[in-house]
Amino acid sequence: MRIVIEKRAVWQAVDEWHARWGKDGEELEEADRARELMSCLLWGQDITALGARCPKENLAVLLSDNWIDGKTIDMMMFDLVARVCLDPELRKTTVVAALNLQMDLRRAYDKGDYSKESVPLLYQYTKLFKEKKCDRLYFPIHINGNHWVPFLTDFKKQTVQHG
Image 1 (cartoon, rainbow, N blue to C red):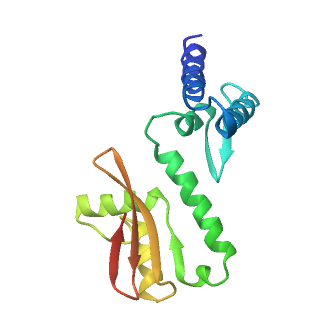
Image 2: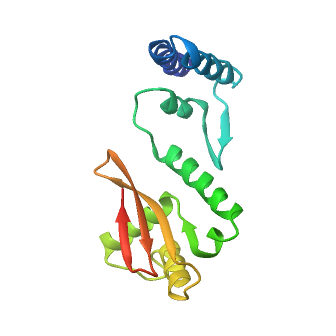
């Protein structure tokens, strides 16, 4: 019962958030549409959205003033991957990575071990770019436990940019 009460509290907070900004016009219509869509999802049921599987209440972060989380970022990155794949020119030059690349980077840095065995995903990306199969790598980094920062490594120009 405690779990149900906690999950219900999450949705009550979302409803209060909707009420604050969805007062009239288009905002009210969007708030009503969001409420309707969320009411269609069952309690305690995992959902799959943009390639990531998560509990329904994880979507509440998108309808609140709360910080977005890793699952949300991975959903966004999966959507970007799909968009890149749809563009014939972009897919020849561009790679979009999810958070697991950041985890491999952190592990390699912490251990001082960049070997294939220690960080296989980082090794695969390195190989891809050494073989000049792609020019650009986009990936998210979570900094200081409270900021998501997009990074672009352009191997052709030999630059690193962040937003």
